[in-house]
Structure formats: C-alpha cells, structure tokens
Amino acid sequence: MILLRQLLGDVLRRLRVRQGRTLREVSTLARVSLGYLSEVERGQKEASSELLASICGALGVPLSQVLREVSDQFALAELQAAPVLADVPERERLPLSETVPGSIGDSVFPEVKDMVAA
Image 1 (cartoon, rainbow, N blue to C red):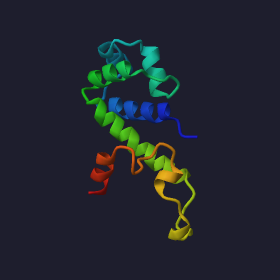
Image 2 (cartoon, rainbow, N blue to C red):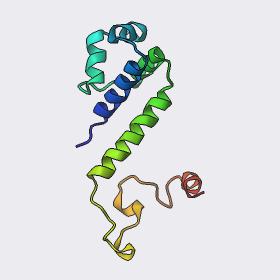
Image 3 (cartoon, rainbow, N blue to C red):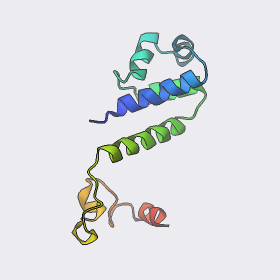
Image 4 (cartoon, one colour):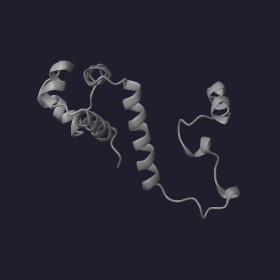
C-alpha cells in the first residue's frame, strides 16, 4: 500500500539534504522537535497542515511545491501498482467517473472538467 506520509517524508528529506541542512537546523527554524521532524521524514508521523507549512517555511520552499512533488510521486507509485489496461478493449472499459470513487464526473465541478479537457 502506498502511504502518503512516507512519500511526504521522502520529499521533505530530499529537499533538506539537497540544501545541505541538518535536521537540527530545520527543526529549530520550523519550531518543531528534532525527534518529531525525524519521524515525519521517515514517514512514521502524519504532519498537520500547520506543521507542514512551518517545515516548508524553514526550508524556504512553498508548500504547494512540496505537495506537487508528493502528488507526482504518488501518481508514479499508483501507476506501478495498477494493473495494465492495455489489453482491455476500449469498449469494455468503464468511464473514469464510474471506476474511481470521487473522480470528477459530469455533474461535479464542471468548470474543472472543462479546464482539464482544454
């Protein structure tokens, strides 16, 4: 199973290491304990949105950038874990809105659907 907290921790750790910063440095700037930040980076703790914003601030990166990278990693992990549909004829495939609970259908957020289609 793909765990969001693990992907998030990996992204945060990579950013910190890429900047050459220590856990102590970032934890001090983010005002979070060193142990807790370490657990977040190892994917052992779920960080609140406030804590994520504080960590991102300490790293000098927008939270949106971190979440975008996590989203990309999550999508890749899902693709690797998903069964391949290449052998299923198009006529036998269900529309995305019927196969994925909560996906964007015709009646939900039509303006977003139009933007995605464009």
